[in-house]
Image 1 (cartoon, rainbow, N blue to C red):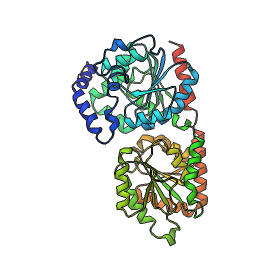
Image 2 (tube, one colour):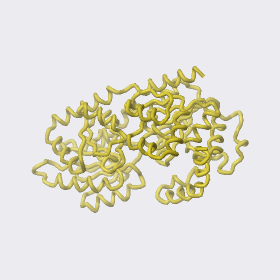
Image 3 (cartoon, one colour):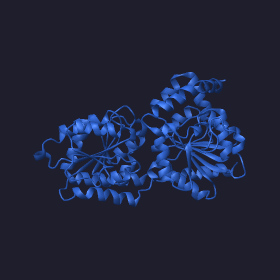
Image 4 (cartoon, rainbow, N blue to C red):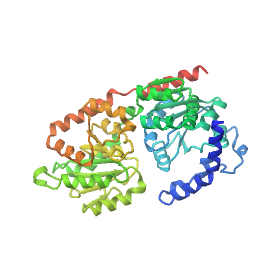
Length: 443
């Protein structure tokens, strides 16, 4: 009955879902594309009302690997895991599902061949069943904590082993499930249908167990296993070259969210107005989290009286500008390689922060604001390693940046600490694949 009510609400919401896709498509055209995939179809095959039986043939995959990553962060985290799964099962087709256009686009860029990328169907029993019949997966691996009750029920019915990998559940999210009895009951039923939940930390594992996960193993964070690509390191060095003669420092604002840029720009101007005191004003590189905000962020930078060049306009940036706007997708490693230190967005609004591990893997000191619940364990480990600094607000972030630039040895040491921190916690991907392999052998 719990799932019946949820399913009824999902069906009643279909008109609202379609309206939301259309409305969001005004600023992000990707929401108006591939809509059939969201109802179990394959692009070019079927649609919302297509004949499901027409798509089922001997040419469709058998025993495929199905991995779900909701958006950009999860897609990037999935890269080493997909590589390891393909090594273990080299003949198995791989399908990667996403929920957002930016996630889908990132996945398509990262996996040019060998991986089919599409949207995850909405959690409607007939749409999920249709997708499973088309792909006939031997496993489903969900990244982090996407929870879809009908999806997991359909996997159980179809004898598809479901795994939750790199799982995390913040205290805030746990309290949200626990506060409302029907939601907790639905979550408990869904978590119980995973074959294994592989948690990032002991705290995550304890909260997931409390919500019904039957078998939970702590494997660590697969984001530590992400590969640093030499091409991006070289690109970052090329971008940095114009600033080397003047030894002008570079501050990166990475994955910033709405309202954060204004706070950080204000703080930047307050902190770095006196060139005689601080030396050359740092170049500020701003890379917003969502491409739909590029134009808005550019307008706000100009409104602050700062000279601006966009990545799409000129590369590498001129040596005399104030701000370089990173209006590109899939190049975050290059921006990290370019900078002296990274201020991570999502942490100066109550959003839980974004991934600090990629910056650390490139040997860059990290500053983060007070909202870090999405990465609390990684933040704790980074603080213990003296690889990052936690600050109260944007002004404190820019003040710490100024202190680090005034102390080159400390800046260098923090960078080395960051690199060691990132390397010390690798191995979660291998542990995850081993668990999946053993589970499938026992079927």
